[in-house]
Amino acid sequence: MRIVAASLALVVGASQAPMMAQSARGTRPNIIFIMTDDHAAHAIGAYGSQVNQTPNLDRLAKEGALLTSVFTTNSICTPSRAAILTGQYSHINGVTMFNRFDSSRMTVARLLQQGGYYTGMVGKWHLGSDPMGFDNWEILPGQGVYKDPVFYTASGEKTYSGRYVTDVITDLAIDFLKGRPREKPFFLMMHHKAPHRPWEPDDAHASHFAAQRIPEPVTFWDSYATRTDALHENLQRVAADLTNRDLKLKPPAGLTAAELTRWLLIKPDSVTTEVEERMVTLTGEALARWKYQRYMQDYLATVQSVDDSVGHVLEYLDKSALSKNTIVIYTSDQGFFLGDHGLFDKRFMYEESIRMPFLVRWPAAVKPGTKSQAMALNVDFAPTFLEAAGLPVPADVQGRSLLPVLRAATPRDWRTSMYYRYYHDPGNHNTRAHYGVRTRTHKLIYFWTKDQWELFDLVKDPYELHNLYDQPGQAQLTESLKAELARLKREVQDHDQLADRQLANGVDGLVAALRGR
Ligand code: CA
Image (cartoon, rainbow, N blue to C red; front, side, top):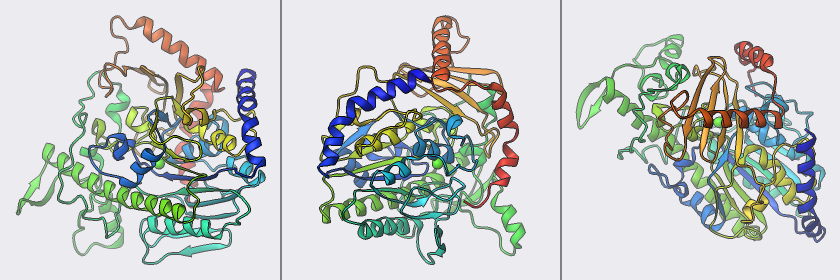
């Protein structure tokens, strides 16, 4: 702990002086943090998407910075949000799964507000408690819904009948910008619901991908040979676990409400549908391929609305002469499997799930076209905002400011490995708890409730298909990664195995108890 605190103090001390001088001149930057839910980097043009085009998101990359190695420390909605707000790992901030965030804790929003920023939060919050540290907030209950969304505000509920959630959040963000006090810099968290399940596009984009054949990822038919039981047992497979509701299948006529609810949750093993103007019943591989197309058509169509939304925000900033000194960030709370390894969710420590897109435009300080492979984490966002605002970073913040990375001056002692931990076992998708270490070249994962390991060479096997654990010739590498994992656990102060097991056992009751926000 002492070492972490000391190094943070050094970071702050070294970088704060010029920023404070800047703030004294009244040029502190505005910050718009746009975060989507479950948007994988590989569904963004600037990240080399093979499946869609995102011109407005690409504009952020072209006019600013694109980071390729930004990772979540716990790949699921609520914990990632808590890590972003606090700059702390799940076991420190208390949100390991879907437990309620203790809003009396210090957050980056509260620190910015106390530091003179006008602060706002619109969209998906999903932390169980009301937002604190915001002058203005309007949030979705829990996950929220795509159509006719209800929002909670400090003064009660509002229903937006006939509206689409992405459009409402865009309007709320622009209203915040219009209504802000002009004498203060602002900090806005704009959190979209899209593209989270159940992937319901708006009318304008519903058929955007209908006539296209979306390419399957190279690992779509991953056989899981050499892998642990955890992967074999998971229930997030495109072929087997998408429901009638996910696939937007038409229910049979005459069902009662209770029957309809049950029917929507059925995972169909055959579907009769029109293929080349003939009705065909699909099963097996053909059905899996059809399900992938249905899933991706809807997922990607919800992303198109988000891309439009980012375009509207950038247009407003341009029009209002705010672009130059406003930091616009685009990210997602985690990545997502787009059929990769045959999956459609997140949670696992595999690349598609833990990688977060991270695009930053800040014309006053970040050179257009900046690209960095520096390893960054969701716990780094809070100290980044604080440093940009010229405010001190508290010693219990575990992340590190990304400003030097964005300025293409990554410090020599920047991290080269990261610690990951997922707790929600078995969760909705029967995904086993695990933790692990990722270096720039390797990944070691420990499924501790199973006592099984996976080891990957990310250079030779970037798709993580060949588990090298216990293979001949890997002993030395395995030992060094285990040592690094132990070092990281000590550094981030995660060392209670007994608590691990208690948390895992208590999860179902905990989730059931947490409804509403
Ligand atoms: Ca999410």
